[in-house]
Amino acid sequence: MAEKNTTQKELTCICCPVGCALTVTIVDDSSVTVTGNRCPRGAAYGEKEVTNPTRIVTSTVRVTGYPDAVVSVKTASDIPKGRIDDCMKALADVNVAAPIHVGDIILENVADTGVNIVATRSFRG
Image (tube, rainbow, N blue to C red; front, side, top):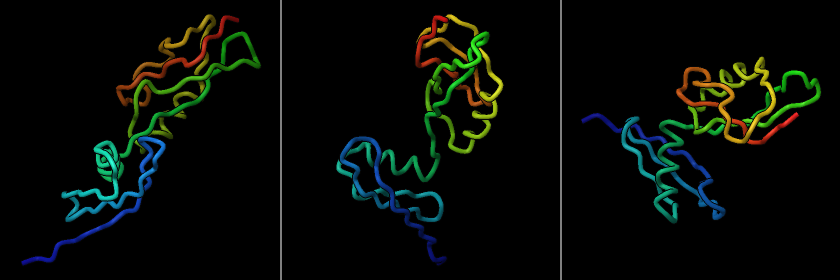
């Protein structure tokens, strides 16, 4: 019988202020177990972090006609961690016209992730 290949990763859970020290064990690149979590959210976070890590991306975009003005933006939901650079490159040349309201879609389907970029602050000009 073939020997199982086991990998362990140590993580700190970011789901709540407790910051549980997690040990995530991956067996043969398929079976994942998480220990050290105090709640189910920690287990879900640990598994997702080693199998498909994602992040919310925050940035700013320029406001057309206002050379020194920017408005803060973020992804409407998390995107794959490996697509963050593509997301930032897509935002580099974005200029948006005022007025801008919180929640306005600034860029649809950023970097082909299926996720929109939305304004997190209003700007009236």
